[in-house]
Amino acid sequence: MTDAPEVALVTDLTQPWWRSAVFYQVYPRSFADSDGDGIGDLGGVRDKLGYLELLGVDALWICPVMRSPMADGGYDVADPRDIDQLFGGLPALDALIAEAHTRQIKVTMDLVPNHTSDQHSWFRAALRAAPGSPERDRYIFRDGRGPDGARPPNNWPSIFGGPAWTRVTEPDGRPGQWYLHLFAPEQPDLNWTNQEVVADFEQTLRFWLDRGVDGFRLDVAHGMAKPEGLPDMPELAVSALLEHDDSDPRFNNPAVHEIHRRIRKVVAEYPDAVTIGEVWVHDNTRFGEYVRPDELHLAFNFRLAEAAFSAEAVRAAIDNSLAAVMPVSAVPTWTLSNHDIDREVTRYGGGAVGVARARAMILLELALPGTVFIYNGAELGLPNVDDLPDEVLQDPVWERSGHTRRGRDGCRVPLPWQGAVPPFGFSTATPWLPIPPEWVESTVEAQLEDADSTLSLYRTALELRALRPEFAGDRIEWCAAAPDSLHFRRRGGLVCVLNAAAAPIQLPPGDVLLASAPVRGRELPPNAAAWLV
Ligand code: ISL
Image 1 (spheres, rainbow, N blue to C red):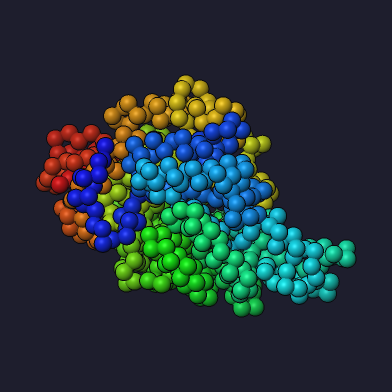
Image 2: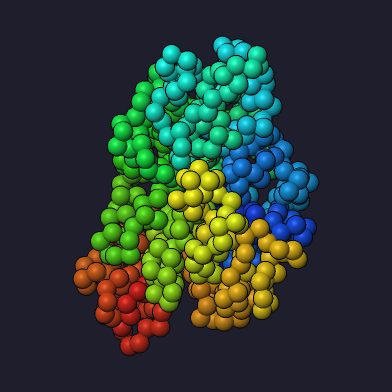
């Protein structure tokens, strides 16, 4: 694979490392279990660093591993400056960072600024304290509406279903105030107008940066600021679970940008560190505001993950994502899936067609300028598991929706590593979610030696992307293409063609560097992509 002198040929040291990096998202519960409790951990990530090096990724994004009662897979943080024992505690993170760095792999962590766990010492103190106290002011407590304050302070729903407010019992035993939780009741929203909240988050940033972490993914980075007076939201928008649009008062309030400026000032003390915001904002101008020079370095753009497999939809997603960051000179980001959305193989139709399309889309994605995020298991071509038994479901969405929405567990099933039967080397115990027996074909072991496997395609594509000068250039140029196909060129000379049509298309002139499906003569089959130089 890559060796340092060749990499140096195409690495521009005047650019930050993350500008064209490939990040690999680890959902730690599901990646690899090193201590035999059926749940993945940081020791498991460390054990698999050789695999990640072979795969060719530049950096890891590790979903939350801080101390947590795990009401939302770790996105409910009880102590933001400690690692949960479930994942191996602080020593496991230190060891992972040290070894990843010897392999030239950066490590970024997921931080959760919008809310804490209800088991955080601050929230427990807030419950013991009186309305109007400084303890309550770190969260968003309000009196209820109606004569007895028995109705929630406004009509906001939780993203996970049910109301976004929960009523507490006051220390004197009477029904009392309500607190806001945009997500589960176990995830009370912080009050970011409280300076203690701001200062504590700054301390958290420094705590991890001083330990050698290379940056952060910031959860719900469009969420921390709340609108003045917490007005009701339009009734129409009130029912959608796990979704919101730009008119939603719960998110994307202008004061959020001052919060990002404060965060950036701290992170700027560590010149190589990067921040990546989870920003579900559709409007390009509003989205671009998050990546102005004094705010986040990067923000996830989800348009490609939301696009159907059609030339028109994919092109619109690419054009939009580029248009969103260009006016502020920020770097585009690309992602096909993560731990919250259905895996791309399933979104594109499942089965052989789903896999073929996912293979095509990774080539398209890796041909684009900017930063790429790969969700663990995508490199194995894994689908969602949509027939998990009810009793194993853990996503709070399942309970909160009154068992009408199954939630996100289907894209969080543990990875199959080796062998012939579940749990395929993931753990020596029963895994926290069952792994389907048919994944025997998809194990890392089965795919490593198979030159045609999806894992081999990823490895080759990542190596070419890192080494070849044809990938140079910040923009793409669209070229004329057959119906329902795409053809674009990078300034360095790379050409990428995607065939989303039902029939084969003729490739343009050039040598085929890599294709997601066999090219016969000059014909690219349907559901395939190719790189040419
Ligand atoms: O509103 C959405 C999309 O329009 C939601 O997807 C929402 O933004 C998303 O659920 C936020 O996700 C993040 O924070 C959650 C956690 O459950 C997710 O796993 C995390 O990615 C709460 O911390």
